[in-house]
Image (cartoon, rainbow over all chains, first blue to last red; front, side):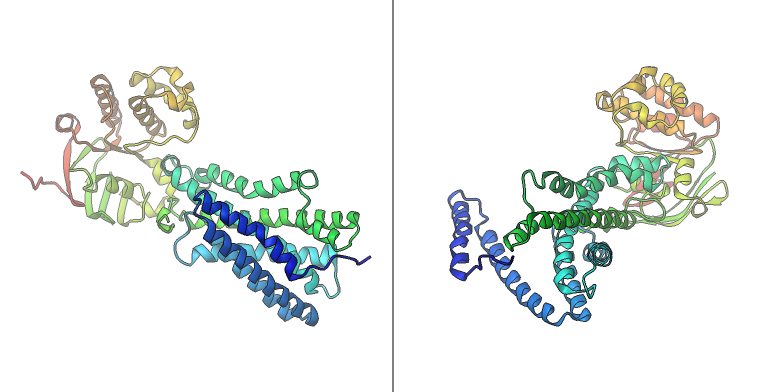
Length: 267
Length: 200
């Protein structure tokens, strides 16, 4: 069964009226986000079109090198996004470096785990599986890491006095920072928890919907979706934990001091 | 004996002095001159250069948490991380004598922190700092928010601990208090510390 309705450009143009309507709403209510909205929509169209071309090429060649290159490119962009979403970033190269390396480690680990364990395509790096899988995992892990680091830095800034008094009473940095770390990790994992609890009741996840529209039997699409959500949850947890722990080490030092001077000035 | 040698950080330029057990070194100077920055540097809470020695052992040889248990610092705005007062004491029994001496009821340990007034919190924080049995106590304007009776109680309690060998460094703006508690005074101006008041 491989019958699906192919979309043409007129149909897409028709649907884009909805975004234009949103922009009109922003103008009418003076929300001031019309530029941002249209720019985001334009970015989305351009980026997805390019991705379509890249994927078509990758699928034709199925080369491990090209697949790895595309994956690294995606991680680099995701790392940039994760840094851009934080209110109080680490100063210098750490703002980008820390999030990106945790993203790389978590997403690579979980994607490889899925490709060699659960899915086993042939070859295992087959870009038709590897790239979409990585994309979904990256997108969610990026959010988790950004929320975790944001929770850490803003928690340390607002609770500085309470943390410093524990350090002054002779607590080590791990126990002095523990409440902030817990809050940061909780907020990092909240989106995936919410997604999992709402899946199937409120929301039909995008990937499953896509497969169903593409002609896959719902029961099979559901299995894929469950796998993906497990993978996302794993990667989110790993990535956020690594990022928040590394953030704790960067924002404290061996003399158990709080080093907020290593945060970039507030934007 | 606490010995500070050429202690330097942003806002403090090469402070050097010694304080013997039982002594109370008073630090005077205008706001923003670097008094609190000096105290923070002594307890190693901010990056700093120079040496600090306690009874012949250099600070670098102590793990930082252990150093801060030996050299306690009571900031002008003490912090609280839990909801009730009692959570902030490792052992409530160690708090009771201090509470009594400062006119606070034993039940203060069950108070929500938010219920305590500024003056009560300052006294509770002093009890908390003393409960850890430090060898040196750094006080940053500990009586600024207190009524005269509480000021007297705090001074009496500190005097008692000094008799038992506690070394005290006390930052105060109050000239009369300085005369009452200080065995020696250090004057602070623009991050420089000296035995002589350059204003006089």
